[in-house]
Length: 302
Ligand code: GAR
Image (cartoon, rainbow, N blue to C red; front, side, top):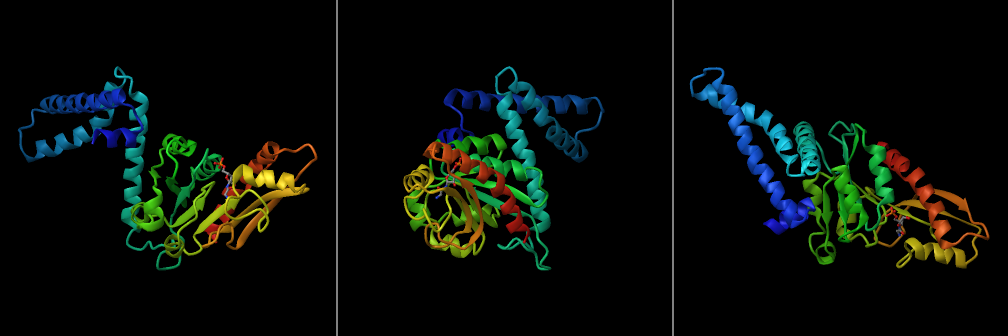
């Protein structure tokens, strides 16, 4: 159980002890303060007293744990933790309103667009994911609800934690031969998937569950320089070695083949004689960061 908590909260053993201690002392302090406040009212212990007591400790609890977290050096953790609790509370309120009608297309029965809940699949540093998160951070219609990653320690996991977005670390066997993590995607009510530097092929069952609801970005002008093994730096090296005069990005729907589904958007950049795989990668990242969030918004709004 402690190991699970350490992984879930991404903390070491000492911090876990301090966090649990903060929970315990904060909880006791909150109960004590609640009783003291009620004592001031001279109210008899009974049903009303219990109701008021529950209300009071619900209100006091966040304050008490934040207060206690200071001397234990855990203020940062609890600030984020409470932020996530409030956010979840808010989104479960949303769920209460929409769950009856929401289906996998993100539309309700009247064909009106309901909130789109996106899962970003990423394996690396996550600079594209970061741009997408920023772009939709105050959107009323689109929520980045889950980060899915196949690499422990990848930068994208820190980005998710900092943004207070739940992350899911997936394993090869279950992704390709098990239930493809569909239950988790459904638990998070995901109705759109964005691949942003995700290097595993998407299994057929997932493509069937999300028809025309999975998009990918590729760092070259498909159909050239796509397919198995063509990712990140390998793509830029191949482009430079072939002395191409331009490269670019391709945003496309995902089908059963690598880098193959229908193209949605392309943008180009020129390649100079002095360009290397690294400088080309920088140009491509600029194009990706500029266009990917906007193209996602357009597809979802359609
Ligand atoms: C991006 O350039 C993306 O196009 C590429 O991985 C990089 C991820 O960067 N994807 C592929 O090569 C897929 N075939 P990021 O982690 O900084 O967003």
